[in-house]
Length: 238
Image (cartoon, rainbow, N blue to C red; front, side, top):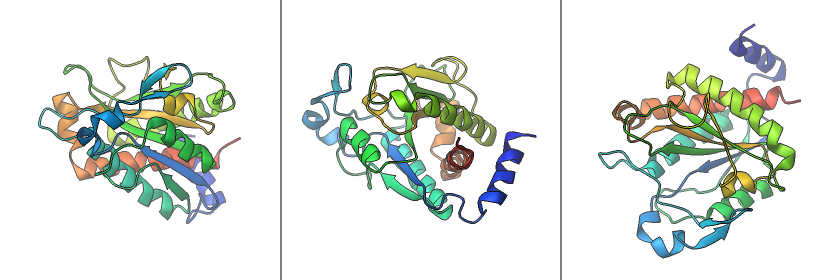
């Protein structure tokens, strides 16, 4: 039986209209549209569990100037709508795309405090122009996140499967291996106490990826794949 067939079978048993009723899902749209305006704030050092890093960054952009923060937020809003339709309570780390921050440490606290059943950190990469594709960044054991390493990896596998199948975006040919990149230098993964991964949806500096990512139809499709992965993870959770 294929993954999709298995998922549909489970959903029919869980209650197809609201399979995520009672579940809390955290969405972290990376960066923020106003980060460019306040470098002193976003450059302040924070402790990521291993070392200091910047509170946040501006994120990247396409060669035409379409910002990562805008892409991340658009996908997040589509995803929120899909998840609410499934019955989930959704917690966002930011509610607009014209603010500054919050710092990556605060984003982790928001999702942890909400006791999210799963969380997703939405990004797009700024890689080499010849590189393209999706990569799933996964946590490595770092103390606070020790208990969610296995579940985060399981969610990452489901997410990669649904995202590539639905969007047609290939696995990254420059980041990680086989679509996965374990990371020990990101506060959002180091400090998490809930199952969580970061998805680099595509490469904003690659012309083929950039042409697709600016289109609302693609953003909705990316969000739909994430919603299906989240539902699949939660309703089949052991």
